[in-house]
Length: 258
Ligand code: ADP
Image 1: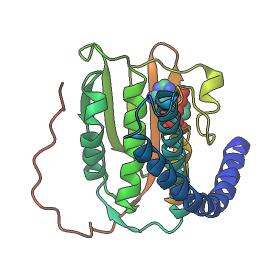
Image 2: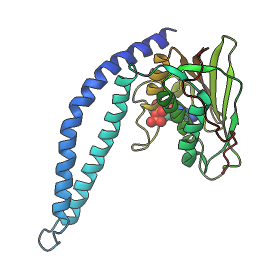
Image 3: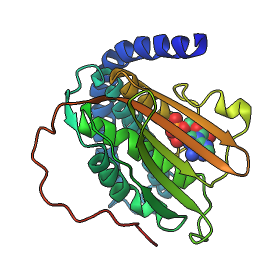
Image 4: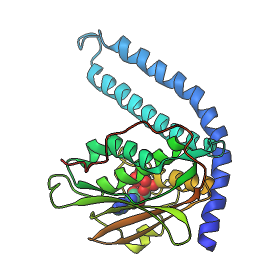
C-alpha cells in the first residue's frame, strides 16, 4: 500500500509540474522545429561542389528534427497528465471503449496474436470515455509489443470483463507474451521507466494509465510470469446511471483475427 501511495503522490506532483513544463517547452520547441525545417529546405538545392560536407549537414539537420519530434511526443504525453484531473464524468460503456481501443491497436495486434473478446455483463462506469479508451489502448499496445511478430496463431491477447465480487467493473487484458522479471514488474508504473529501445518506448504509457484510472477512483495492477505472459487488471467503480447517449445498434462484437 505504501508503494502505491508513494506512486500516487509522485504522479500528482508530476501532473502539476508537467502541465507547466510542457507549456514552457512547447514554444521554444516550435521555434526549433521551424528553424530546422527552414535549414533543411535551404540545404535542399545546395550541390556538393558548392559545399563539401553537404550530405553530412543534411543528415545532421534531419537527425536534429527527429530529436525535436521525439521531444514533442514526450511533451504531448506529459500534457495528458495535467489534464487527467479535469476529465469528464458521464456514464461510459466500457465495452464500447474497449472495442474502439481494439480497432486502434489492430495494426499492432494482427501480426502477433489472436484477439479474444470475453465480455461479461457489466454496468456502466462514471468517467471519461476517451481517457479510458487511452488506458485500454496503452495496455493493448503493450500486450502486442510483448509478443514477437510472425506467429499470430500461437499467441493470444484476451480482453475479459466482468463484475467483480466487490461490485466494481473489472477489465483484464491478458497476453501470452514475454512476461516480466519481478524487478521490471516492480517499476512499470514509474514515469519514464521503459525496457524498450529509444524511439519505441517513452516509459510514460503505464504511468499515464495509472493516473487516469486513479482519477476515476479505480485501480490498476499487473501480474506477470517471465516467458508466460502478463495480466493487467483495471478496476473501475460501477454506476447505476443509464448511459448518457442512447446506444445505436452496433455490429455485434466478434473476435478480431489476423
Ligand atoms: P513503454 O511502453 O513506453 O515502455 P510503459 O509505461 O507503457 O512504457 O511500459 C513500461 C514497461 O513495462 C515497458 O517498457 C515494458 O518493459 C513493461 N511492460 C508493460 N506492459 C507489458 C506487457 N504486457 N508485457 C511485458 N512487459 C510489459
